[in-house]
Amino acid sequence: MESISIDSQYFCTSKFLFILFILLIFSACSTSNPPESSSSPSQLVTASVVDDDDKTGIELRHEEAAVPIDGTVQSTSATAIFQPTVAEDINPAADIVEVNLEAKVSLVEFSSDVLSEVYTYNGTIPGPLIKTKKEDMLIVNFTNNLPEPTTIHWHGLQLPADMDGSSVAQNPIQPGASFRYQFKVNDPALFWYHPHVRSNEQVEKGLAGTLLVADEDDKANLRSIPEHILMLDDILLDNNGQVQPAFVGSIEDILLEKINGREGNVFLVNGQQRPTIQAEIGQPLRLRMVNIANTRFMDVSIPGHELIRIGGDGGLLRTAQTGLDHVTLVSGERADIIVTPQGEAGTLLPVHWNDVERGWHSITIDNGQVKMGHDPLDGKRASVVLFQIELIPSQSLPRELNLPSRLNEIKPIRTRNATVTTLKFGHSAPTATGEISFTINGKKFSELTSADAPDARIDETQIWDLVNMTGGDHPFHLHGFFFQVLETIKKDEAGNIIEVIPPPPLENKDMVNLPRRPGPKGSTTTVRIAIDFDHGERKSSDILANGGVPAIVNADVQAGVKGHSGGWLFHCHILEHADGGMMSFVEIWK
Ligand SMILES: [Cu+2]
Image (cartoon, rainbow, N blue to C red; front, side):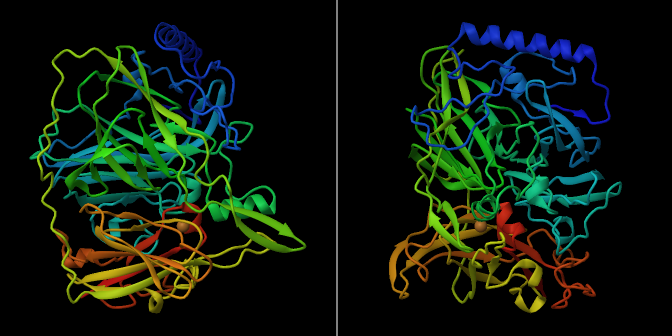
């Protein structure tokens, strides 16, 4: 979604173009299948849900695709307005991509005639798509024109620690200040970028963009397949159409938001509500999705259609997963899927968001006693149309999708003799004043010292046992290194193994969901991962952090010296949990 800067003029001409645009959209809609919602574009209405039995319990505002308001509309084609803006490469060198990014306060129109104050990169929600090739040098000249400090974290990238934008390796960039991020991009995959300062507020307010590292080799022969990059999001707007700050309302509301995370009441795909993309009937279509929502898991399906998952966080899978009827992306995760749309020309295929059971809690406070329970609607809320695929006649014969049996040469990480590190994810008991801490190994992030941080030697392989002791799921994220999932082990409260889930298809990941414990307090779910702390193309002096280290108070940062080297964050990607303390860091030293 385009936006205007808050200090820009709002011209009458742009208003006129906007109204004209809406009329064109509506006349286009009325000649094809009608939208499921009979909403007027000037009103906030309840979302059209897939199921008549609306169990959501939340009011969803739902309209036609939100449109730019600054008069820059070039086309009324739904596909044209649906593409994210591509950041301009200002460097003529073939192997350098250099872009300017500015974080600032902007106004966007999520709902007609309602201007919402948001944070943007370069004035758009989502931020611009940065396009690079494998092994390019990326330079980002970043300026912070927000009224508060920020950084940019390059989610999933294998880069030097001081370029990672995390609080253990970079001091926040102050309002009005600039910072030059510079690193090589080595792995062909879809990444994303977002702040790592007050991220539960700054990401919710709009700061997120994608970084695509293209694979020029394309051994899997995928480049001829049309593709869309889709940032799946939700946003919580108040009655005035403004982004609701975190943790407001009754004590119960505050505790629920801290415990379940903050879900939005408006679904956005590339900053727009229920947009439409076009696809040729019978021709494979590649959808490269990233879930940027603070907490909402994005389970996606296209009724009547097989989904083939070919990739995820770290690029292509070793072998494609076929025959899927849905794909789940936890917060922060990516999924690269292929679908071959079938149907009559003009049909609008709905792409559904589906609820998944994830340990959604309820709260009651009685005589100063807080009781947590399991919300009976967990996983049972009605599906919602996220976006639509408009079928258009194909210009050629239906194409067979001939994927190679090996999409990507991924080697399993060798774990023999690997050090095992155990990390326990928990929380404190919620109080009647609305307090709750989220912890790793019993401590929240602000309580950590270097002694609490796990450490690793450069080039060491480790196994991490990620133990979920809580009744809710936690999507785990590690900065700077990929990992591979080995297995998942469920134990009862006596410590007996009750289930072992074998490894999923091999892929490199930076996100994995830690499912909730299987039973009462004391039972656990452990996700076992393997991490190779190799430094790849990074120089060993680069891999060590050399910035400010707020987590190690007054540290005298010295590269390679334990306790003084900064580190790499790992945390729950429910941003309200990370903010509540479920974050730690690993130090890596020689
Ligand atoms: Cu969590």
